[in-house]
Image 1 (cartoon, rainbow, N blue to C red):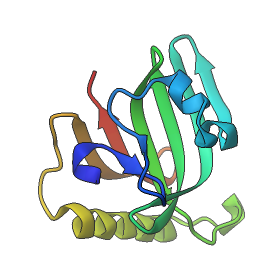
Image 2: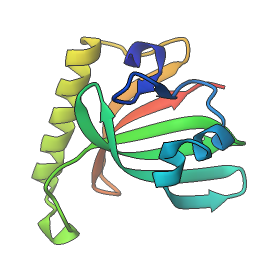
Image 3: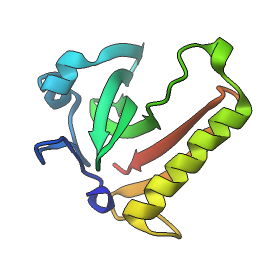
Image 4: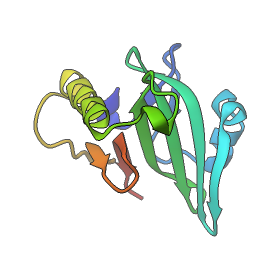
Length: 137
C-alpha cells in the first residue's frame, strides 16, 4: 500500500520499498525490463514503460542515490505519443488524474510518512506531471 512506501506488483509482491537496493532492483524482473537513463556518479535512474499500481497503469522513473532507492516518479499512461501531441492543458489534466488517484488511495491532506512523502507535481520546465515518492535515508 502507498502509505508504507511499498509499491506492489499485480501478484502483491513488494517491488519498490524503502531501503530497496539498486542491485536488488536490477536482479528483479523489473530490472530486466528497465532502460538505463542517467548514470552520474552515485546517481542512477531507470525507466519502466509499464507498472500497475493499485489497478492503474503508470510509466515509472526510478532513482537511486548511492545504490539505495531515493525517489520514484510515476506518470499515468496516456495516449500522447509524441511532443507534437503535447499541450500544457492536457498535461495539467494528467496532474488532476494523479491528484484524484492519490485522493482515492490516500485521502486528502498532507502525505508525509516516516519513510518519506508522496506528492503530485507538474514540472513546468520539463512539461511533465508526476506522482513523486521521495524516500528518506
